[in-house]
Image 1 (cartoon, rainbow, N blue to C red):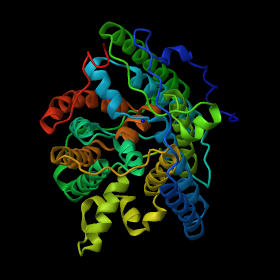
Image 2 (image 1 turned 90 degrees about the horizontal axis):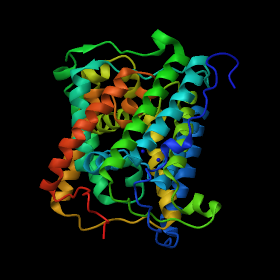
Image 3 (image 1 turned 90 degrees about the vertical axis):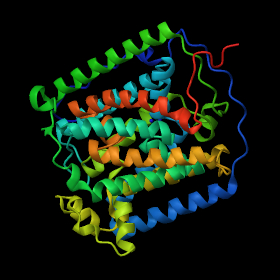
Image 4 (image 1 turned 180 degrees about the vertical axis):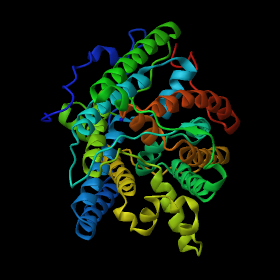
Length: 430
C-alpha cells in the first residue's frame, strides 16, 4: 500500500530515485479525467466523527492513544490519495510483469527500514515506549498463512490496509471483505488450539547478528536487487500501461484533492508508520484488531472469548479486557477508515456502491475469511508481517512476501470462477 539520534547507526545514504521510476518500456499514463465536485455530506460526517472521536479518546484515555488515532487518520489520507495497494501491485506483477507497484513497495520498505534502524537502534521512543522490532517465527503457519492471505487478497479485492481505506471511501463490496476478515480472524483465534503447535523455528532478526547498521545495509541491498530484477522482468514482458486516477492541477490542490505519486505515498506511509513505532513501541499493524472486534461481538452475544487460549496468551488478555478505543491497532484502523472517508469526500469520489453481483459478493466474503485466518496463522498481514517484518530485518518478512507471491498466482486462477478479471498483456493496446 500508498507513507539525528545522538548514537547508533550512521545515517544511510540516499538510494537513487531513478531506480524506483517506471520502466522506460511502459507506456506513459493517459491524462486523468477532471475531478468531480466535493461530496459535502460525507465530508461533514467524516470530519465531525474524526474530531469528536479524537477529542473523546484524548480525554478518556490520554495523549498516547489520541496521537495514535491521529496517525491512523494520516495513514488513511495517504493510502487513499496515493491509492497505495499491495493486492493490485502483486496482481499486475504476476499477471503481466508490471513491477511499478513492487518498486513502490521497495521504496516504502527501504524508507521504513531506515527509520526503524534509527529508532530501534538508538532506543528512541515517546510516551515512555521502548521500540522493538517485529519478528515472526518461521514455520508451517507462516507458509500456509501467507499463501491463504494472498489468495484471499485476490478474491476479496484488497489487502489489510487496502480493505480499511477502501471501506472508508464508501465501496460497499469491500465492506463485505472487511466482515469476512473479522470473521476469519475471530475464527482462527477461537480455534487457536488446533494450530498453535504447528512446527516452527525461532525468529531470525539480522540485527541480532550484524547490528542495526548491518541489518539496514543488507535490507537495502536486497531491496535494490528486487528493484533491478523487477525492471528486467518488466522490460522483457512489456506490460500494458496502468489506467489514470483522478488528479488536479497544482501541487496544493493535488495534495488535498487529487492523486499522489506512488513514491509520495510510500514516503508518507513510512513516516507515519515510524510515528506509530515511536509512540507505541511497536510497528504499525492491522489484523490483531479484527480478532479483538470479533471477539468483543462474541462476548456481547453471550459467548466467553476470555476462555479461549488465544486470549490467555501474554499481552492478549489485557487487550481483550481493556477498552477497544485504547487498543493501539484498533485506533489506527479506525483512523484509517475515517481519514480515507475525509480524503475521498474532498476528492469527490466517496460513493456507496449498490447492486453487487452475487459472485463478487461471495468472493469478497470468502476472500476476507481467508485473509483473517491467514493473518493469524502467519503472525500478521501485508503490514504487520511483510512491511514491519522486512523493515525490522526479520527473515519472516521476506518469506511472507515470497509465499504471498505464490498465493497470488493461485488467487489469479481462482478469480475467473467468481466473475473477476485479471490483467492481460493486450490491455490498453490499440
